[in-house]
Image 1 (cartoon, rainbow, N blue to C red):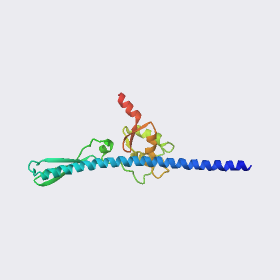
Image 2 (cartoon, rainbow, N blue to C red; image 1 turned 90 degrees about the vertical axis):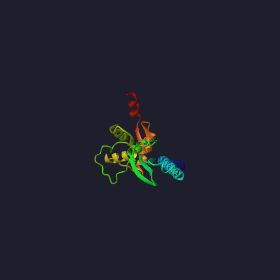
Image 3 (cartoon, rainbow, N blue to C red; image 1 turned 180 degrees about the horizontal axis):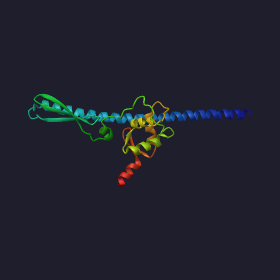
Length: 206
């Protein structure tokens, strides 16, 4: 009897240890997904900073060469992360600034096209119970099919909340990103932005 009680106690302790281990592994996967998103955003900012530095160097070279007269009408364009291009024109010793908007080709094509990362709507209330009994991947599949385009995790979160889905964790957008990354039905097209694999296949075939 003593041995049976001891075994039962050890088995219970083992189950608790395994459950704790699984919870920590889940948190680790979420943290790794967040780190990857942060790295991609840092890379985008570094690219923008490099373009700005090049523009500054070009202006300095022009000013030092004393060729302001020949530089009349010269325009230097600086792209930011939102696809806006700041045009700096050298004319008679002064710099006139104008801002025009055009998409900047980069690996952030979706974000550049929309000029900013979609924001999360605060205090959003459910408008229906459409997704109350759906998993994240099931609901996101429906939303991506209906939208006909890639969606950022913030957009997906807003739509899921509007459809009655409830999230237990403190970082729901990371949970969405992790779920879509681990499912072969989806592909990442830009930082934090996902689309359906099947959409790409059907578009290729048309």
